[in-house]
Length: 202
Image (cartoon, rainbow, N blue to C red; front, side, top):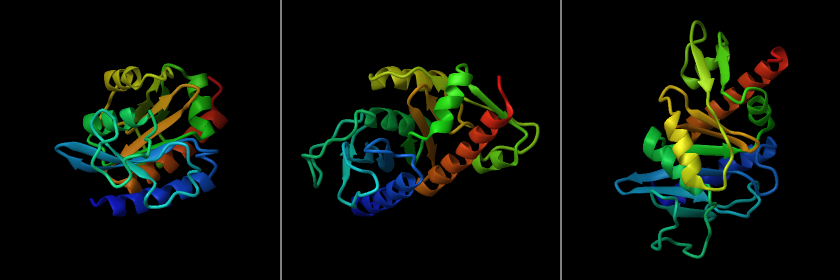
């Protein structure tokens, strides 16, 4: 995918999530995979209001989440979290990764720190799971400012059938084959977690 096209798509999705209140202030970041060999991702820039991004507000990063020199805006700075985006893209084969700070996953992780179990809900189909007799546990990992630590925790509990990771007291990562699927999965997961919180105490 061309960088300009990816930048426009990432800006549009960022504006959508910001309008939902899931990317408050300058928080959160989105990425789209540009190539696999070598692995390159377009990641939204750090420190900008995510409701006001343009197609140019992306940084190309490598497999470690570091900005590459050969890009239109070499002075732009990616979020430190780009390293986890790259790890997810590599391990899960994701075409896009959404990292937002919606409240429901953080509260759910506080209540169920060993993982959030979801089952027998129609909305699970939005994450390509079965609505009946299928149990999905969304993993929860402790927060860290070290993306290698978070990446190791993600990889240790990775289940190819569960396209989400909650970082305790922080936010959630959701991924898919492209930005649209990642967004749909994020929206469905938010509903599922809201239901879980509203109907189960422990």
